[in-house]
Length: 307
Image (cartoon, rainbow, N blue to C red; front, side):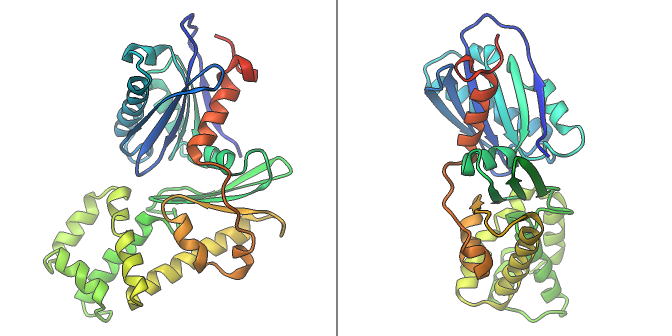
């Protein structure tokens, strides 16, 4: 299902268009003119609207202000611009409508991060894209029909994501502390990091955002290279979850597969041959997809809406 929210405010100002990729780790924005020429770029902090609406709004705004600065344009132009915002959490409840109301743009479309990733990776072709970073979501297009799986947040979804990996590692560290599981170099490292105090781990986990859990993912990958049993077990479970989702969302054997996100490429060699042989390099990034869809919506040269 392709989901977007649309809002327009009439403006006679120069047409400026933002394409925005807002994820759990960071937000990136590209400013274009009506012809599609890229004028400026900006980057800010995380923009997952489900885990932090105000933080997402602030970081989306900051990324766009930095793009205006990069283009030598005044910050006041942000209120006249149109924006397509691809953002994590837009598929949940009324989050897309809520963020739309508080953004500073004259016109806006809110899309899911999966939709912009699909467009950036394979354009209008059929295929499957797995976006695996701080969170995870899977999206497939076949004969014009789009289907998604996952993207429900790391507490109940986001299988294989950095946040889920980090949560699993902290869980394992507590199991080792309690004597349920055997200590490994990785769990010893984590316990030492928290000064061998399980209450500190619990307090950290209670208040941590997905991105903070995700900071432990590189550590798991590092220790997996050293064949640490805990790291290998966590990654093995993650790969099984990813493959199970791919099996459900791939509708035919000919669909190509792109792995995106900070962890996507790391999983590629771990997948079984069925999926490895379908892997192709993405044509572009999620940000490229956001820009393309923004121009389709708003550029007069692309048949978009008029001011």
